Length: 117
Image 1 (cartoon, rainbow, N blue to C red):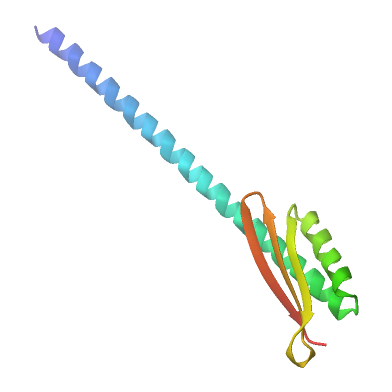
Image 2 (image 1 turned 180 degrees about the horizontal axis):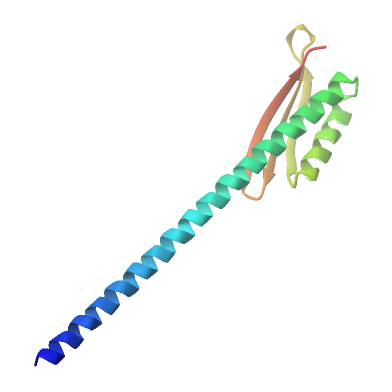
């Protein structure tokens, strides 16, 4: 009878090890997806900053709002993003500003750049 008890115990350990391995794989997958989402959001933020700065630079060089938004769109595309909105205007005391919103995959980002005349 002792041999049979030992085989039953080994079977229980196998089930436990299998459950632990499956849970570890699920946790690893979740951590990897979370890391990928954080990296994508960071890329979107960087692309939004670059697009806003490009548009503000265009405004500072005397280009129109339409031309500045075209620069922002090109900069966003160069960074692998899609420009959703671009608004260029003059603020108080002649301050020029560019606001952009863009997306990379599921991540969206907004940025604003201001230039003194």
